[in-house]
Image (cartoon, rainbow, N blue to C red; front, side):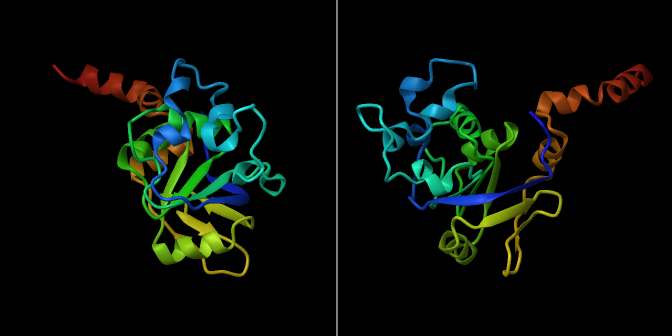
Length: 191
């Protein structure tokens, strides 16, 4: 996982409420412990037709959204089961941030631990971002702010520990390993 301090990308809207983890990555693709390749199955049942061809009506398949790394999702994104494969699939599909009015706690925790920025904004700010889907956004994690041309910035908050891990590009274990010398000094000072 590489550190992230900011993300600048066009946004893509998927304004469907209650998108659960089985819609993000269906259970039939949970047969791996590898993150690689899961992106092609993100939103499998919406994104692809039964014959394997792309559904041209699905937002992520539209040419104007190619390469978009910021997903503006509907309310209650990531609800359902606690599958870590969901953020893995989004990351492998090129999504680096999800913005919604509500993100399920377990999904948000899994996302942040794996390098996917999960941001909650107010309904009014969300509506503004949805109306401007396709425009470039800059998400500044250090300042905890979303910026776009011609509009006031939108502030957000991320748990301070998760924020530091994202900035450093480490998970919880990586955070501890980076402090191994300090931990050893502490242990040596204890009787």
